[in-house]
Length: 113
Length: 112
Image 1 (spheres, chains in turn orange, brown):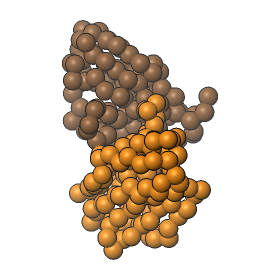
Image 2 (image 1 turned 60 degrees about the vertical axis):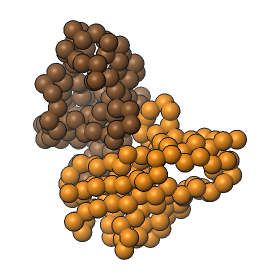
Image 3 (image 1 turned 45 degrees about the vertical axis):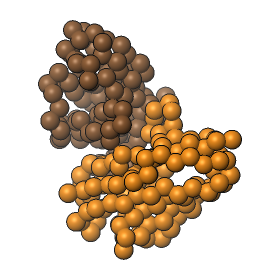
Image 4 (image 1 turned 90 degrees about the vertical axis):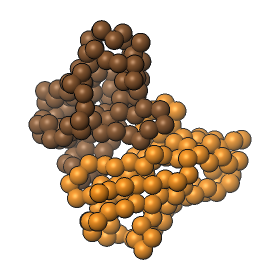
């Protein structure tokens, strides 16, 4: 069975601080995909990244970076120099084989000016 | 229009009403999904359609009835809902079951 754990329910930071959102997953399959989505107050889930289980390279996109470590079953997300517009709920998700997405419970990030 | 659109964005209905939620995707995808997001709960997958055939129905009560007339449109027909059905209903689409799902803005439903 698939499972995604986001242990941080809520994080508050001040603008320009760096922040890391944790994601730990469980799967028995060797082929799987990991995702991060952002949900601003408007409600829409915005796709951020997709990573397959065979690609452990870390990824950087502007102020966003992702650290995938199969040894610890983690796929953590770091925002560098956070901004108020980063305030949102962030979801980590897992897709195993041809199954649908299993989402974590989300981490609410509040960035204060 | 681009991406995934949903109408209406907000809906208030009584328990005896019948209403429908509409989702349209402009991405050329062949799979569409309905999710329910309640306060302080994880996203719950309700229905999956692939090539216009329903492939998954996660024990959703019969008062929710999906319809997928073609690969671009997905409906969720609602009748005799309960107050606990109040939630954000999100639609998504993807090109196949393994590919990235793209979400619409959601419909915020309040059942009185």
